[in-house]
Image 1 (cartoon, rainbow, N blue to C red):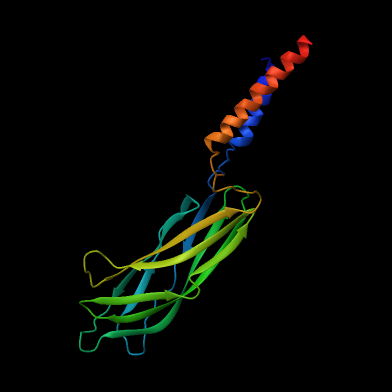
Image 2 (image 1 turned 30 degrees about the vertical axis):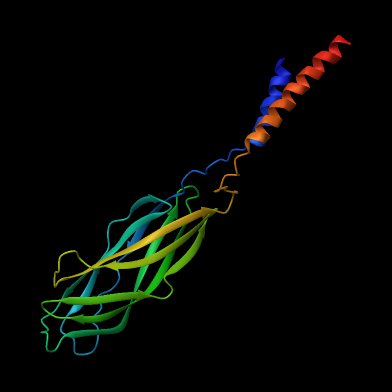
Amino acid sequence: MNAREVALGAILLALVCPSFVQADPIGFSYDFLTPNSVTGDQGNLGVVAFSTTAGGQATAGATLTAASLTAVTSANSSNPDTFSGEGYTLSLQLTDSSSGKSGTLTFNGQLFGSLTASAANITTSFSPTSKQILLGDDLYTVSVGPLVPPTVSNPTVVGTLYATVAAQSEGQIIVSVPEPSPEPTSLMLAALGVTGFAVARKMSRRT
């Protein structure tokens, strides 16, 4: 069997045993803008404040710490501070590593619950919870939440707010599911085909 026949056999095996290429992870840099403090309903004595983490770099699929929420009040349990949907905005600046393109997504949040000097029972909601932005050839989807309360009860700590950043390339086709593996009979037929081709070539040369 010469080099040409070996090459043909390799091509046939590649056709019955296809492989797929996985795209490189999509990288980005990010920075959260700190929301303004929220005082809640009229007559409240305290406030819920936000502190955002320093910006950084990550890859698609990362869960980021968006902000930590803290609270301070002198209200007692008989007359707690209340929050009935007072709003705030959380903005995320993204920069796509491959293209250098940047953009900002802004989410509108609301606070609900009660607050005293001894307990913080605050929740948050967003509408919508997810937004998209196209930067270069990469489409980013950012989802905000959940707000996770502290593991140990603390009257001054409301919780930590997280955000997830997903991304997919719009500039290339990414195969995420491999094709089914061929049955043993298919492999056998391919091998027999290569062998038969080689035998036929030798016989033709003899004649």
